[in-house]
Amino acid sequence: MRGINVGGKNKVPMADRRQHLEELGFSNGTTYRASGTVMLKSDKRAREITARIENALLKRCTRDDGRIRVEVLTRKHHNAVIDHGLRGFGEQPEHYHSDARFLMGTDSAQAIPVFNPREGVNTIWPGDGVICSQRLRSKRTKSRLNTIIATPEYTSMTIRSWSTTRARTIKKQMPRQA
Image (cartoon, helix red, strand yellow):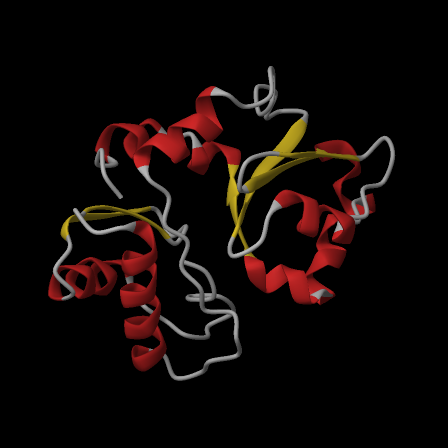
């Protein structure tokens, strides 16, 4: 989920999210930290799940600034991001801050031009429905990755830290179907 619980806007507490998903007919709804990440079980297609959850969120939230979005990944796709990712990516958290920027309704080729990595500070890699980014912790204030916030493409991304993306909790609890 994107665009909720950001800057005190569109607040949806974790317990409410789980209950809300159950009310929408999804079982085994589990939230992960305050990340906006939710694992659920459903026999419905990803597009249908996305539409149902987005519509319900838009009705529930007080402010729609176009940033409330939902991206549904199947367990297979999520695990592919983790298992077939870049060798060594995210393995040095003491030196690099690593993120997965999941794309919504766009692809890497369309989204990559808005990134403006600074040589020696940032590195980005396009993937299938995701752009991985890494910034050197010792030079994070020199990073230009936050400049994407001012672009229209930003509303088509939801960002998760690599540790949240690859958390064992998600991998174990995420259902086989979307």
